[in-house]
Image (cartoon, rainbow over all chains, first blue to last red; front, top):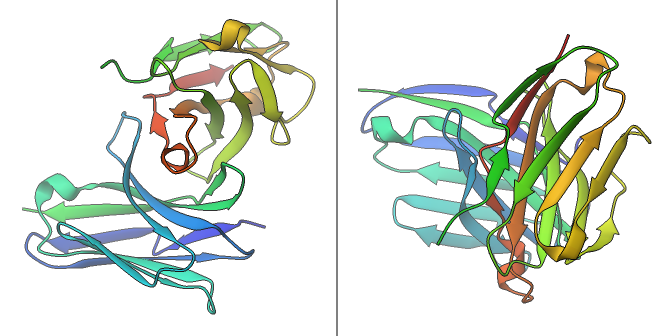
Length: 110
Length: 116
């Protein structure tokens, strides 16, 4: 069974719309992170939210964390074509071990 | 500052052959991780080095996989002999040794391994 699962698997929206991706996990965590991967590139860290935080913002990104439901969401506001990428949630479960999900593929149409 | 570099970017080998993947982390990063992604599935943890020591190798699939990090700098991941199911993209990541910053990992572009 997977620790982190993103939903939806794929998302297609128009430029300017908001994109929301969700992540559910199974075990207790120390932190949760979101990464972005552009095709053929490595993953790039976007934002980290600690287990005692509920919401965090970074530019057009907003992340929420609900530890009671073991879920997180990533909201990208006013999306741009350049936001087209795969987005992964990653849970920090102890030490520096991080468990990644399968990702959400986001396609933003210009 | 150079990022994490991986070599080769793509390797095509036949079943039964040996392949060695290399990862050069960001200079000064004590933590080095290997991951594998197969067919669009989740990115699976393989192992974690702290300097030259294996901190956690619980994700290594079997004894056909051998990872080393001599001198605590670059790392190699050898697959011998390779099987069809070893195909996938192998990612390397590194992070600093300090407690807060260590959670954020910097990834290489990956090595795409195709075993035929």
